[in-house]
Length: 231
Image (tube, rainbow, N blue to C red):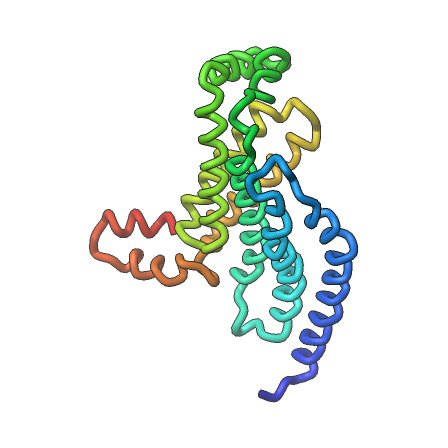
């Protein structure tokens, strides 16, 4: 395949930028990921999950730069792939870490704190109700994070997964956003990211939805078309 000047520039730029990012990852993040967490059933969970955020970091400039040389082959959907994988990492890692943590369900933690000291009366009321059966709520959060992460990773029923992500982020935002500006901010930004993923059907680019979505859309069955809307 013969490349023109713009395409050669794009390829070389990707190599240089990704080499720099790879060096930064190895020097800055790998030492942290390599530290075991002995509270988990899988102490090296962060290390095993490390390839996913690294891939998202490397794909972001790669997709953007390559699109300048191959606009006809790389649509705007390609730009959402790094975001989808980043969300997959955050929620898969969060859900697995909670489920593998031997101490996660043993204490109400922030639920008890919010029930006692949240500045909003309605938050204290909600948390007081949850406090009565906090283990079930904590388990629901962990399983929800895991399912949302899987949806983002494989690009399967991405709109449904994005809806779950928005609900989780809003739960954290409204019930725990008072803890700090950063707690509010990260969940606010995350909810916007999930909305973008869902509205633009990000799973239809290198995902299971790319295969099943169009088939469900074209089905003569209303139920199947409705199911297809969630892809």
